Length: 398
Image (tube, rainbow, N blue to C red; front, side, top):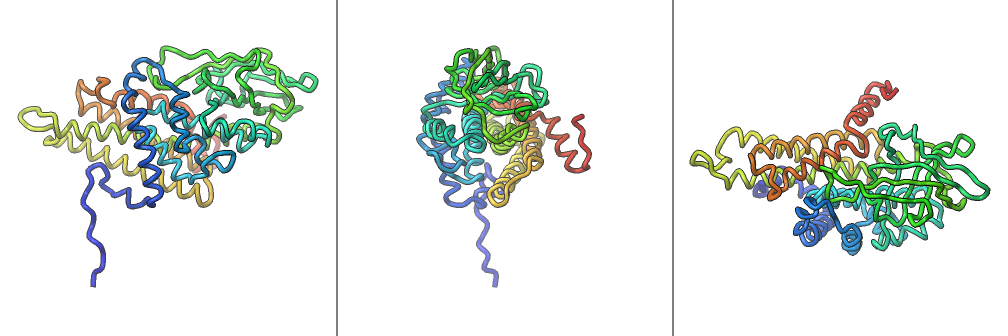
């Protein structure tokens, strides 16, 4: 006797019934984040994007109310949620806007994670509760004007002067920098002190400035800054005590990249849904666009890629929760999901025609944002080489 339950009614926005793979708690977390985005982001995001402004502090405080900031970290006021829960939160945040997800990602997976993983107990006690509560904003200074994909060649340096450290150099493309209260800055301390080291830098330290970068065509609803450090003097205890070399910053990047794996799918999902609705409502040649085979073919391809991206994200999330992830596995997720989400946005734009470039619809905004996501936290080329090296055992970076 067949005791199988009947298949559930098809949901056009979830043809593979992805929801059935989530626990009740996971769906509750996702729905909570979605509601906050609907309430505090969606009514304003188009204007923030057009104006190139975002109320970062106010948003951080709103997100802190539901435990979003550093939600996957344990202790110090952090929520201690699972990797899958964090991924679902990133999915919903980026479904609204990549810049908004970047605010949360940089706060939690770069600045907070760096302090949580590598900082001293004093660093953790001083900063993590404030960052988790949205009372302070953090940023992460690794990329430099001349060194993006090659952080090991960074020019920013730290010199010992008595009991102090003195930092000089500059960083570029730093999310949250202008409004940050604390910066995690990576600098070359020389071979005597272990090469590349991390420093916790209060942004009110003399010699530290963070002007806002303007004229961006992407991630406009996000604060992007340069960091300048001119004879910034720090006490000896400002340095991360143990970690040396690229292990420190790269571990933080893997943490942030994992959130992007999920987030990019959220951006693509929004573009797909906009195209699906438009196709059913827009009439041409006496029929809705959805009636035409080319349109249905595009929708089918986009839906399939979003579904596959979700399944890959969930698999990596479950793996991360159970045994942890290798950087190469995170590269697979970011490489696939960001490139496919960008293609989805571009294809969705063709269904909307000229309306696809209008700010009245979210498609072009998400496509423009994903051009940045394709580059930051490791370019598509870097992730392709990481994957290729894992497959062949042959490194291709040098």
